[in-house]
Each structure stands twice: as C-alpha cells, then as structure tokens.
Image 1 (cartoon, helix red, strand yellow):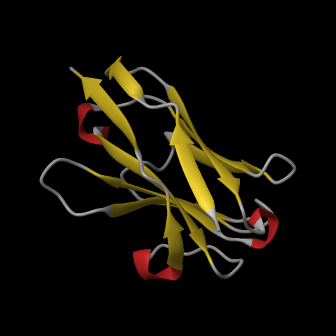
Image 2 (cartoon, rainbow, N blue to C red):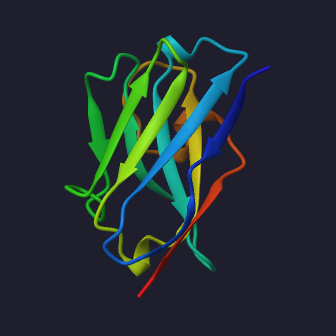
Amino acid sequence: QVQLVESGGGLVQAGASLRLSCAASGGTFSTSGMGWFRQAPGKERVFVAAINWSGGSTSYADSVQGRFTISRDNAKSTLYLQMNSLKPEDTAVYYCARSRLASVYTAQRSYDYWGQGTQVTVSS
C-alpha cells in the first residue's frame, strides 16, 4: 500500500523559509508524477506545485511562482517543496499527492493518493 508522509511544517514569520518533505513508501515512486496542494482555513484545497517522474518538468501556481521550488530524489523516494519569502497567505495545511501517471498534473483528480498533511503557519 502506498504511504505518503509529509514533514517540515512549522510556525514562522513572514519572509522566512521552510523546506517540506514527503516520504513515499509502498509504491513505485520513481515513475509517478507528484504534486503539492494546500488548504487554508475555511478554503478549498488548491494546487501549489507539480513535478514529473524524473524531475525534468515542473509547474507552479501563480501565487507561489518564483518563491517555491518543487524537487524530488527518486533514490530516496522523497518529494520536496522549498518555500522562500513566505507570506501570511501561505498559511495552510500542505499535502503531498501521487499520480497514477508520470507527467505534470495540476488537477486534484489526477492524483490517487494523499498524505495527511503538514501545517505551515506564517505570522506577520
């Protein structure tokens, strides 16, 4: 069974950086497209970033473009999200997700398994 476990969230001040990790097990991580999504309090879950199987292609939401970087280490079966210049509006639970297919996907319906999330809180 595929398991995804996020870590690295925390409470930081605006302008700070955080690095989120998603450790995958029980599946073929190296052939899966992966994504990060987030859900702010009282809001719907939305797309943040996605990466293809090899790491050669990525996509970002406009709200994080230039500040966040998605990457992966297939040898370690781990997905990362480097978040710089954090803003209060980045406050959310961040979720890692795995696709059945290998490309970059921005829609939630393209992902078949989700982690439990890690809380990121950015204070002003």
